Image: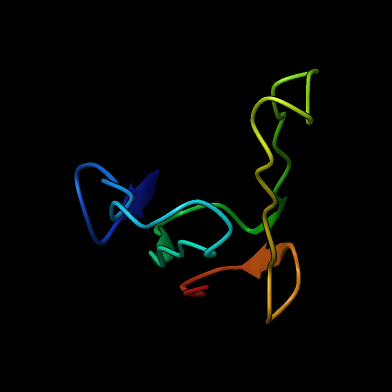
Length: 65
């Protein structure tokens, strides 16, 4: 089972041209090894969003990212 430390992410409102950031943690509870993946909206000019995994995308058993 994967769990998250928050139920939802609400991006802060900022002026145009200012970067808005949000952080959450993913908890692996039971899978031996897991490779995380994601998909973003295809139109990056209208929704300029990016995702980073500072500790990598591989989750081992009882691993938290």
